[in-house]
Image 1 (tube, rainbow, N blue to C red):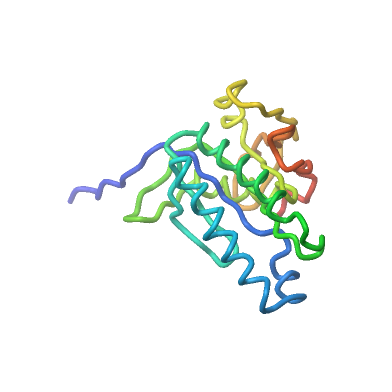
Image 2 (cartoon, rainbow, N blue to C red; image 1 turned 30 degrees about the vertical axis):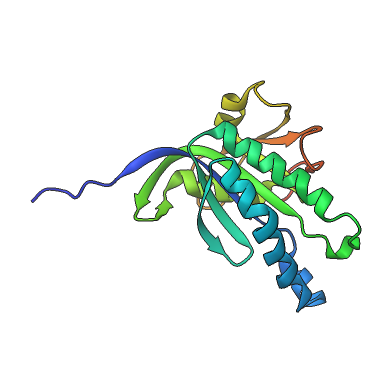
Length: 190
């Protein structure tokens, strides 16, 4: 008997979610989901498409996006974070919808329209290390982006993350191009 061949490919994965979504819903149960859907429909989803990404999984207020280029993934993340600052203008601070984003470049396993594997898992763990309005990425993403974009990468060092055997070297994207993304200082056990 032959072993079934698993389809794999290299991809840039962007993982993101809304910071404090449960708190936002608790405070404004009717208006928060409406505002979130509006941001997705008017801004987030079109920005992903504009940069050549494809949303392959939505989990409530979280999402996973595949890109064929790490540069496109980084540009998309920056545009989303910058755009959300503008979209939150005039909205009370306690009602701001802010994303945190993680980006990884890695091998993924293709299962129809879905993907999984270490490349996806690591992106999700990096997202958990990003601050509100921030972007956290792996060393391979930082190396691939290099000086091609107007981003400064702050070295956050080696982080041990849940269910990943080896520590990952984490960088947070900083500078003019981001929404001011705070350093990833949250506990790495997320």
